[in-house]
Length: 246
Image (cartoon, rainbow, N blue to C red; front, side, top):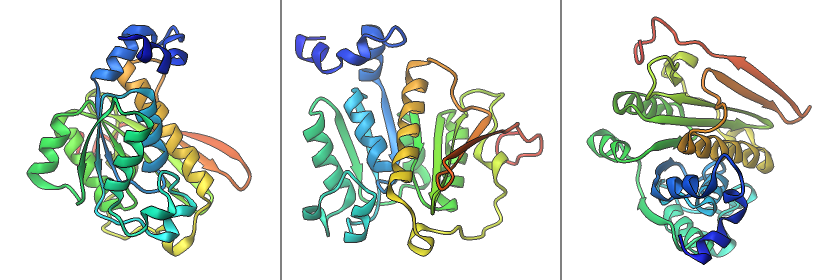
């Protein structure tokens, strides 16, 4: 690690939970981020700034003017551009040491399995149950940690599923796959800063998973009611009848 890197990451390196060894561990790590919207924007910024070596960004959408209220990675000049291209450009400016791989499409099938197989963690920043259930299944099959969050209106939730550990519950233990469509922020609205809070927590939990430090949200779902600014934590046990992980 050269002098410039030591200076860039000095505040992390000072932490006994990280140090130079931990920083090097982050540099060697790779993370898949699914969705570059309100959650994906802040968490990608924090993971890039922290020095995660490789970030794989996936999103099939373009930057829209209505995104800018909460998707803080983008600028007005990015409107009309593919989100992954605009995200990569801004993240490279933030930290040119990070390597990027981008997919301007929704990954599925063999390609998704291939990408997940090659990373250390998957972060679900999507906005629909179909993608969430799919990622859960693939991460279970590939034994990869999954860090998941969701936000609607002024409410958020976040959890970690250590699908590389047999005792961990999975996303399917939390929600039954009823094939029903979930509400979206385009239909119900959302406060941008609430999405930023949850995305920041996802980034923190991802770094903890990569460094193997602290106590992550495995077996717990943390819920935020931002209107009252109240946090609640709900325990989540492995479902013995779960069709995915049991």
